[in-house]
Length: 176
Image (cartoon, helix red, strand yellow):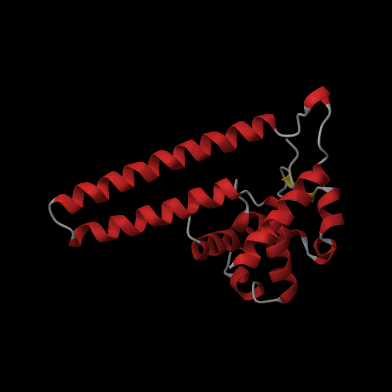
C-alpha cells in the first residue's frame, strides 16, 4: 500500500510527491506543521483513538512540547492543509465506524436513566454496533491488503487512489 506520508527515525515527515500535486499548499508548511497535522488527523496516528481536542493537544505536545498546535490551527494555511489531508485519506468505512462509536458512547451515557426492558434494547443496540464496527474494520483491513491490485496484475497509481478519496470526501462534505 502506498502511504500519503512517511515519518523517518528523526521524525522528519516525507510527503508522497503525488500528494503535493493534489494539494500544492503542503509545500508552504514546515516539517513540524506537517507532522502536527499527520499526528492529529491521520487514521493510523497513535493519537487517533482520542477525541479531536485531545489529538490536537497531544500532537502539539509531541511536536513542540507545548500547545502551539491550538495556536496555529486557526491559520488559513493550516485549515486548508487539514481539510486537504482529511480529503486525501478519506475512507467512508472508517468514518462510519467512528459514527457507530459515537452512538455507542451516547447510548452508554443514556443507560443510567433507562430501566427494565429498555436496558436490554440498549445493550442489544450497543452489541450490534460493536459487531458492525468489527466488520467494518475487517473490511478496511482487507481493502488495505488488496489495495492497488487489479485484474491482469496492473496497479492503480497512488495519485488515482488519492484523487478518488478526495472526490469522495468532497461529495460527503457537500451533503452536510
